[in-house]
Image 1 (cartoon, rainbow, N blue to C red):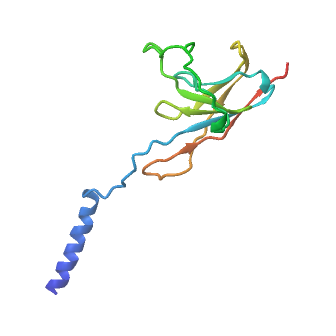
Image 2: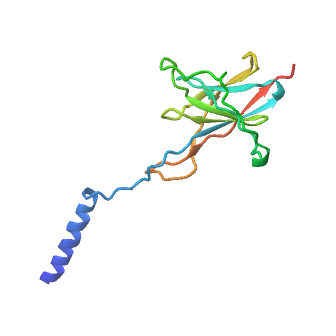
Length: 165
């Protein structure tokens, strides 16, 4: 009988210590990219850039790389000295980094902490004239990971209609 109570006592003690001994989820140190896709419809030929803005700031455009090019067709190039210098420390950081992924699709990665609830999306002409602009509410859904550790999130694509001239 003593042995039975000893085992039972040990089980109760072990069970009571589990919450205080560090039985927590171990999360991987992974930074997940949160992407916002904008599909442009209508007069897409007039669009030079799509800009995404939140309460904090607007997007900064990354270079368009286009489709892969066979290595045999690549010609040596020299650095482009017409490129602007580094961004000054007085320039606020961009809330999003955007790139054109095809003729009518733009992808924006969030470059600041947190997920915006609202954005403004604009289609700009080459001379920076606003061709179309709209406000959008974003609904984020986790598409991987776990409740405890988080994971990648997505929001439905935004469709921006540019009127034909």
